[in-house]
Image (cartoon, rainbow, N blue to C red; front, side, top):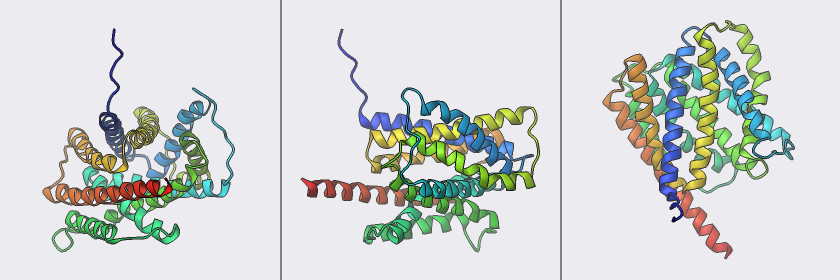
Length: 297
């Protein structure tokens, strides 16, 4: 009997990105449902709590992961960016149509490029500049200033993308010294002292199905991180960025089934422009990484 043929990197990346898209769509819908009565800060509190309960066993199984860190201050800073990301993102999902919030949140890689240039000294060449300009154009297509009313809430997913980018720059540094599960573990711990005062100011005790929503939010958001990490291990960043488009139709379908909302043509077009800009950036990063590897030979 012949041995099974292993799946190609493309198929593995596609499977993991499909899992990430599904878990992200479920978490977005669950966050919105939980935030109908609970304040988003309370939802962030329980997301960190249940996320910690889920990730802690994975620090010991299937093998024990070190709890030590050579840069604890950076872990605290990473926790702060995670708190700001969740606070703005959860409020955005509570106030905006789901697909619209997800589309605007696609801008995170563009902010990563700018922040990497500012704080890590990475050079910005013309392709990166073109991608950033295109991404900003995609934002304008979605918001349609002058034709549609631009609400303050529209800036929340953009702020979430900015804070996510800050966290991404930190993760680039931290991933060399920490296991991914350790990063998730310490991030959840660092979020607690930051979110607790805000959660107490807006406290409402969950009841009934809300407990299930909150537990599921912790599970789906943790699963999203796990799927994304494995997708990037399976294939090049350029391919994974191209597959990120799966997030939008999945989130749009979930919002249509649960909330009977469907995004307009401007949201789809703007999201396509932003995703295209992300693919251009990711391919540029992959080319630069290959060139750097060849230089070392």
